[in-house]
Amino acid sequence: MPFIDVRNLHHTYALKNGGTVHALKGIDFTVEFGEYIAVLGANGSGKTTLALHMNGILQPGEGKVTVDGWSTADPGAVREVRRRIGMVFQSPDDQLVATVVEEDVAFGPENLGVAEDRLAAVVRDALDRVGMWEHRLRPPDQLSAGQKQRVAIAGALAMNPRCLVLDEATSMLDPAGAREVVGIVEDLHDTGMAVLTVTHKMREAARADRVIVLSGGELVADGPPSWIFEHPDLARWNLRPPPVTVLATRLRPHFPGLPAGLADAEALASSLVTVGQS
Ligand SMILES: Nc1ncnc2c1ncn2[C@@H]1O[C@H](COP(=O)(O)OP(=O)(O)OP(=O)(O)O)[C@@H](O)[C@H]1O
Ligand SMILES: [Mg+2]
Image (cartoon, rainbow, N blue to C red; front, side):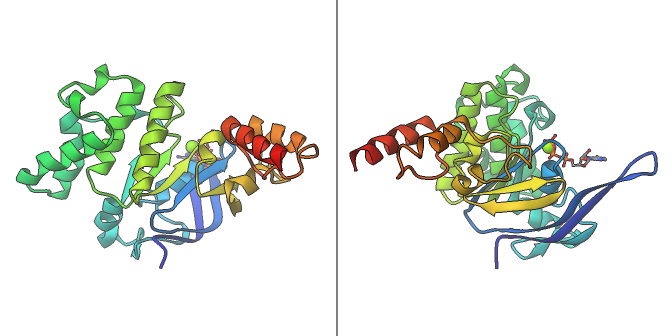
């Protein structure tokens, strides 16, 4: 049984004017324990809607989402689902609720009923894992955007989830802040955490084991980043390949052994050296 199983998922939003938006049109995919998946797609393709289904914030209009066997549509399973899936959103300001960092991180486990004597250790561990322990007594509104996002991740980690779902978690950060957050997410993945990350940044998607692509509410591709980045329909999905991939594609006629889908300059440089020597 996969960790997350999404079957024929449809979602329709009702608009105030009586109209509807069919945002997800029969999505099928699975996430295995420990897998690292990036979700790509143009604006309005349904990425956030999909992310909100992973922990039952939204309910399927049709179809089913199960997390570790628990259906998100089962009111009795909400707790089980939310314990397993940690959510991190685009804007850290919207996620931090307390006036002191450590209280913010304690909020989730306290609500879950974690005993007082264990709470301090849970909070310490979560803040340690994102490198924010020394900032535990600061008010969140005095932190940088990157630090706030790390506290938001700690808040998710304090629930001891099996999977982190991130919706454009780096898009409001400067490059250094984004790198820090990506680094933390990768470290968590290395310790066995499954990751589903919605992103517009191809370089971040390049780090995933698998990329799924949404277009117009449909899942149109599911495969390794190297395959997605050189997919002939990329432009049709309103996605642009990473510049390094474009360069590698142009270089391939001159260096026939160059691997597909190279997405960062380091990988291209070392591949050119290898191919040039053979
Ligand atoms: N609360 C809502 N009420 C009505 N329609 C909505 C709502 N949220 C999203 N939609 C519509 O559903 C579709 C999918 O939106 P969604 O936010 O999931 O896309 P997205 O891929 O996350 O886009 P973006 O890249 O801009 O974040 C869009 O047509 C959007 O306008
Ligand atoms: Mg979105």
